[in-house]
Amino acid sequence: MRILVTGACGQLGAAVAAECGRAHEVAALGRGDLDVTDDAAVEAAVAGFGPDAIVNGAAYTDVDGAEDHPIDALNANAFAVRALASAARACGAALVHYSTDFVFDGEAGRPYTEADAPAPRSVYAMSKLLGEWFAADAARHYVLRVESLFGRAPGARPAKGSVAGILRALAAGEAAKVFEDRTISPTYVIDAARATRHLIERGAPSGVYHCVNSGSATWLELARELARGLGVEPKLVAVRMSDMALRAQRPRYCALANAKLAAEGFAMPAWQDALARYLETVRHDLAREAAGRQA
Ligand SMILES: NC(=O)c1ccc[n+]([C@@H]2O[C@H](COP(=O)([O-])OP(=O)(O)OC[C@H]3O[C@@H](n4cnc5c(N)ncnc54)[C@H](OP(=O)(O)O)[C@@H]3O)[C@@H](O)[C@H]2O)c1
Image 1 (tube, helix red, strand yellow):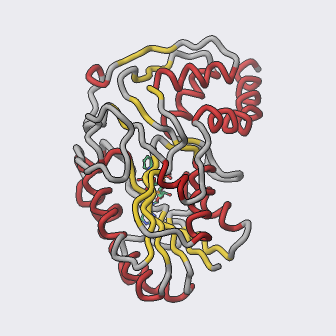
Image 2 (spheres, protein in one colour; image 1 turned 180 degrees about the horizontal axis):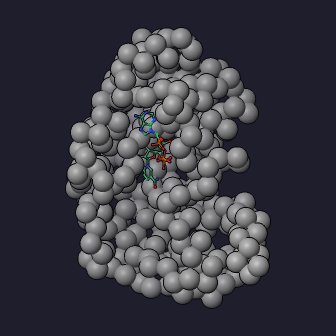
């Protein structure tokens, strides 16, 4: 198959390009190669490569920044998806697009399923929900909702995000502030990339799929598990969301159920298992940083 990946230098885009590259011909396009907000460039890039599948790893991901820059968020997260879906339809390609747990309000008392109604509470969340709707313009489309991404593909830029931040603080013996009242189903980019490849190869039915590691945890529980895996005594400062001056509202409870993906033949591993595999990949780097601090 020929697979075109946009946002291919991003955390998830790089992992997808690496995973699909094991078995398929991949055009991995970073922002410098293709600005997805340029409709004409999207049309030309897709028509030129003639993909069987397009995977959109590009996004405006600054959740708080989107409150002040709604047009930028809408352009990258919604209107660009409309252009990608149109280009996919024109050449008969499947479109994979990523969305977020933030489309929910976080008021549920049980894991959200794909059948639950979205209720976005921030500009970022609204822009992502619009993107979900535009993705459905492609004849074959997969909207994968991921959450609290962590990990990186071999050779990719150093991982960012909250998990990487907590890990760095723990490894350096520094205090880390973590939410005790926000529940998540974290997602290892390597597992999300494998799930992406699986759905494309299987030709699964179009639709929304929750693509998170199995189970859920508060950020405090996740940080304790990281510390346990690292073998360090954590200095964790438990905070509540209301303690932090956050520009955008975050959902309080966002465990996602991934049974629909499992029914299509891809069972996402438990988040503890994913975290342990991620730690194995960074152990060497952390040891080198620790040696650097002691020198
Ligand atoms: N990270 C999370 O915890 C999380 C949680 C839920 C959902 N998601 C979703 O998962 C997907 C992947 O997120 P991620 O964490 O991998 O994001 P990321 O690391 O920030 O990667 C996004 C990539 O998109 C690129 N990009 C931004 N605007 C672009 C444009 N106009 N044209 C082309 N490329 C553009 C960025 O380039 P620059 O770096 O040069 O700007 C970056 O390389 C996104 O759809 C995101 O909304 C992420």
